[in-house]
Image 1 (cartoon, rainbow, N blue to C red):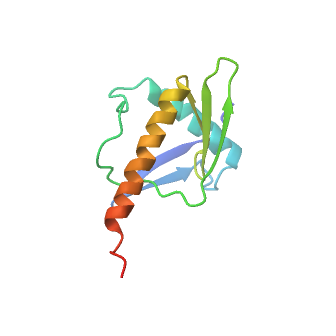
Image 2 (cartoon, one colour; image 1 turned 135 degrees about the vertical axis):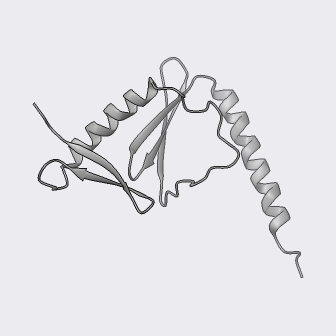
Length: 123
């Protein structure tokens, strides 16, 4: 059973999707299912995504009003869930909660130091 037919095109430096034969935008559920299938397929492709974040990201995604939740699993690992408006909930399991805490503390320290450098001197 065919649920969705999509064609990826590139015009004037921008990517576009053309939906099915009717051109109608499909239901959100169909797009979500397609995203899941594409993500699973991408995991098996080469080159794989980098293990570490590049220092410079060409077009960093801007997410306003992002939501997050966390939970502790039975094995003691932390699951951090981040909500992206276009991708939905993305869950990340961190088995070493102490290392995550240490890394987060380092990030906050660096941010606070940078903010201190950027503030104008008090008058």
